[in-house]
Amino acid sequence: MAKLIAALVILFMEIWSPALAQPRIYTAGLVITDGVRVSGLPAHLQSRHTQMVADLRAQMRLLLAQLGRLEVLTLEATFSANRYLYYGAGEVDYVVHVILLRADKIFSNQILYTSQMRVELPAGYGGQEAGLNYEVVSLPAISDRLEIRLIDPHRSRVLWSALRDSTVTVSFDPQVFILNTRKYPGLTPPRLLQENLAELMRLRQGNGSTDRLLDAADRWFVSKPSADVKVSQELLGGLVQSLAVDLDCNLPLEGQITQFLPREEGEVRVQLDLGGRHGLVPKLRLEAWRPLPANLKVGELEVVSVDSTTATAKLKRLERKIRKQGVSLQVLDRVISPKRPPPAGRRTNP
Image (cartoon, rainbow, N blue to C red; front, side):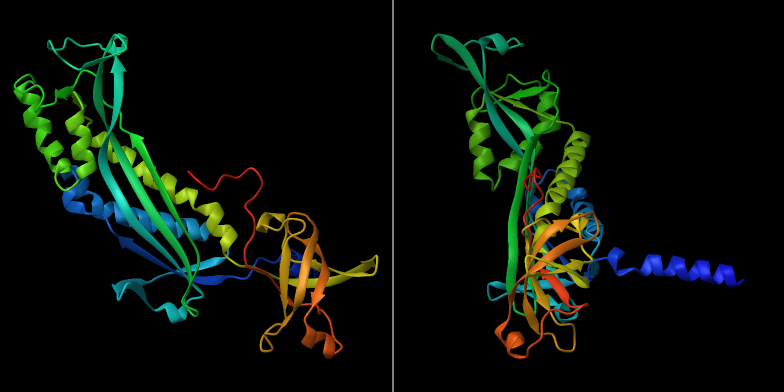
């Protein structure tokens, strides 16, 4: 029994060891705001829009949880006097506000020349350029846009914000199209008009850009509702994932000094319970704070070297008040990186 107890004590100490400690866990309030004009969407996208917003919330909660240092709560917000008011913000360290600005079906125009035409078209169709016949075709696409804001609610300050947008062409059957009803009236089979024209007219209403694109084109290609939904889901998920690196780099990272190391060239050196897997890199500057209840800034450190879970840092500066007191860094002092550069080779845009 004594051996078992001793083994358990050793195991506990290994698990608890400060060298393997995790960064401080902050509380983040997640707010999702839907800014899409749903009435302008095709019927099949209207019917799933509520689920799309719910998916966005679930994907953001998962993303924040995967960062490994946030406890996520759900908050609500209202817009008043040109700013958002967050309910329950006093209970969290940060607010992560995601605004869905766009989740639309649109059309993008392309020019196809004679060699690319694969259908029999009426006389006088399209145009000519440099001796070549050409046509303008409108291709179906999904376009999404997100805005994200990282907010310190206690100082009413936006710490970081970004826009993420992307447009993806939806797969379509090149043999299924509508000839521009203004340019070539009466030439499209009635069945195609009956099945697709209502959706196209809805997209044109209240959307001047789409209206001008369709009006300039010779042919309008159409996509299946199931293809629209699939692309919409994949595109939104990709935009959410594109936020991960920048969001992680703009969230404070907090650990502790675990021990003092031998001086090198007269410099004070310490070991930290944060490392490369948490985002530390050599030459990164850190703030050093005395733990609560003092909550006093001690000075600044510079990371010298890192491994996966620990780092070595040297003292760069002591606060004047600390120097006057004749004290310096201490074991268990908090070390904080307000923000960090993105990892080398990691893109932060989709």
